[in-house]
Amino acid sequence: MTASDPKADLRLYLQDARDVLLWKLDGLPEYDIRRPLTPTGTNLLGLVKHLAGAEALYFGATFGRPFPGTPLWITGDAEPDADLWARADETREDIVGLYRRACAHADETIAALPLDAVGRVPGAPGDMTLHRILTHMIAETQRHAGHADIVRELIDGAVGQRPGGLNVAPHDPEHIARVERAAKEAAARGDRRT
Image 1 (cartoon, rainbow, N blue to C red):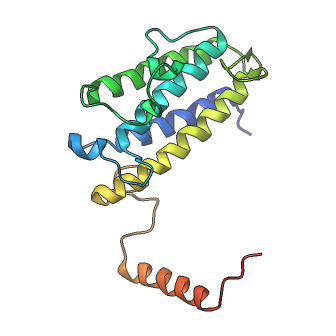
Image 2: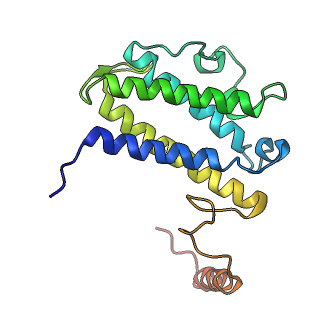
């Protein structure tokens, strides 16, 4: 039987999600990492910027370890949704660097505190444990890595958790046709929502 280290396990899953998010930027020009590709404006660099703020907030101020130089868009002194897109004067290197620094700061907090350490998210009611914050950040980062996966697929077809897209269905026209046929057949049977 292998011994388990819950904190190390959680940290591993968080780092994996972080890595997935960042590789979605690889090889793309500035326009493609910034342009809105959904009706809500979802874009790759904005997702990284958003998660930089989340890491800084949840693992910084929450546990009395403020992240140095926290951007105004985290504290609410910026225009609405400023954390979800990059201004023209914000470089890829600046935002990715900020994300890496926020993650390193978060890792220091994770290493320094036990999972049952209690903190308070600024502006939120109630206390939260490091365990709960870690779980939340894994879910948050994986959620946005999924958004990034879809956005990247819209840009150039690159998909998956790693370069090469080995963990997703292949680009197969027959598969797409099968899915489309099933959708049409279900629709022809009528809307059965209850």
